[in-house]
Length: 376
Image 1 (tube, one colour):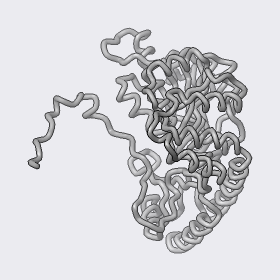
Image 2 (cartoon, rainbow, N blue to C red):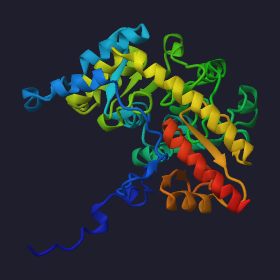
Image 3 (tube, helix red, strand yellow):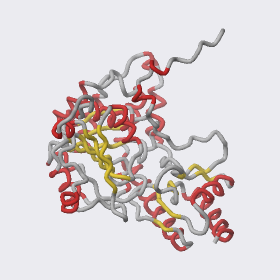
């Protein structure tokens, strides 16, 4: 079959032609790598969850799943002490973040005065989740990136008001808590003060919250402009199924539901997530294992000269000693250990290391010690 010529540039929106797409962590085809680059849980789902999924692979596969994931909504409502209309399920939390931009933010086209500009503004801290700027660009929003403090903490409310870099009238604010890629956690009291001062919607992205000291779910009941985002990927070993959820005021959830794609969450994902909620004890034991190992590895790396940021996630954000981070990244990969290096960011001097299993982290530390001897 003859190949057609390429589509003309003008057939593609200029906005889309200029976007730098989100760069996900590498999913290698090379076998035998120790994969510490995408913050996946090193432990499998509960055996009972896997058994439930196996039983669901039957004649139901020819049918559409529940379009609203109603059973999962109600089950999550019970977990969080809320009615199901406070919950919305997505094809991963990324889908819901994108829906939030569409539901709460006006595109900037034709907007001139300050009030209209506020209605088109999305803001977030830097560094933060690198999907946020992509979502902003796709929607045609005004982007307000505000740097965190030197220690990656959120500036005080007084400082934010004094310096006027943070827009308290922005239509939508994304706050990743705990932060990624730094791992820094934020006190609920500080988040409460920030959300209370905000006149637009705030999404608290708690993808890693099960590894943190505290969470901000209580703010949903206190403040109507707050939505908390959670996922079954990081904590509950369901990356493959892509299931995330929002918790917020029923009016906000209804607005998001109105623009949601039909049948957006696959049936097996719904089955797996519902089964997960029945076996939380299994996962909580794994949280403790990961947190304990995170502390141990952090201490060992620090003793070898690494600058290790405090973490409340399932990863560590470190600056290696001796050689540059790029050299460490290559050296680890050559020895079949894959970590994350943000080559084109202001933090290219650091590596992000997922906390794997005990055996994986033992192998990681063995290689690290050999490289420390060589490069320091």
